[in-house]
Image (cartoon, rainbow, N blue to C red; front, side, top):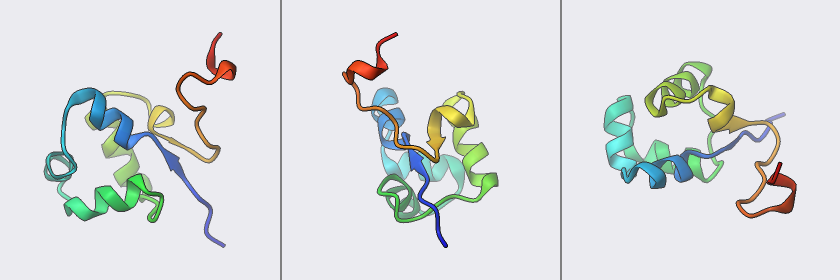
Length: 79
């Protein structure tokens, strides 16, 4: 059984103004891999997940979760 892994890769890329291709080059993966990750069509290996978090300089839990992330502006988010 395959479990869905939710991520904030697209949001983190947008915040930093980098393209999928730029992120892929920095990580040494094909740019389509970034698209697959962002759409939830592919779950990263632990090694790749840690490299992505390190690239964005955030804890891995900021990038990946087994639960959906709250939407921006969601009242449940404010605290």
